[in-house]
Length: 329
Image 1 (tube, rainbow, N blue to C red):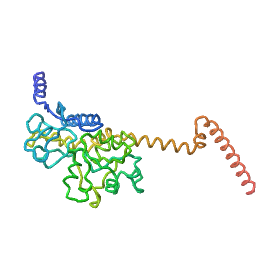
Image 2: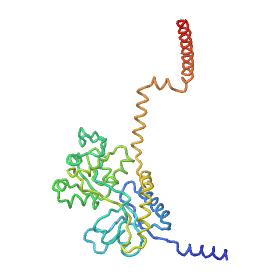
Image 3: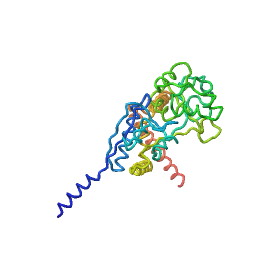
Image 4: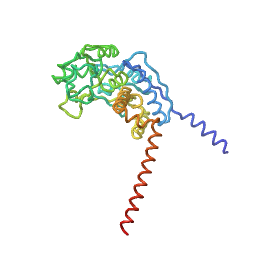
């Protein structure tokens, strides 16, 4: 009887095991490999918490779908619309157009308007930013002085083309199809500035120490680009019975700090670490005598001097005690 019960539980577990089919794409980004690694690790964590297995398929073309005017969505959104996939995990932003075809989970990442420039582009940086302030109000001034470029069809491209703010529309950048081409223009000597969101640009600057990202302020309504805010989330069908698995898993990963840890691991800024190492080396060079004094070769002399000082202190203390006793008599 006990053996039969165990057998039934095992079979029941296999029958009720949940297997989902996901779809993603290779983003138009110079570090698409990091994006792919991030998405695979994120969905693995979600499946572990939600206790389901999955298969992730990559589309041959980087088409997100759910664009303005689409009645039948293409690309990733089309895979859900045609019931070819259970979920989408990609660098796909939440938009009102896409919500017509799919439902989104809570965001796993948020982003703001930003520009990518060369650190040596002194003509684009005023005296207040010095190329080190990542959250400055001078974003509009930098765009005015630069040769502005944007990725064609991106959210930043749409922002400039559809904005009712004349200051924004007046700074409409030139559209370029491939991001790697745009980044190479920025790295040239001609004061180009690539306009996008800081999630995409931070990943580039984190691995190329010649580049710098300046992000718009969103807490001040008078700041340029304050109304540009993106949210990245996982998409499922409107009637999907699997939505709760993803929503609760993302909530758990967020509350436990695991989500932030995964993001930090992939968006790790190598340039900041390198700058800290250079600063430490310069600090050591500024105090060479102090460094030599506490080096391993001089520790013996230091210990001997310490012992000698202790001996003198003891002798002085003894003399003081004897002198005090003599006075008392």
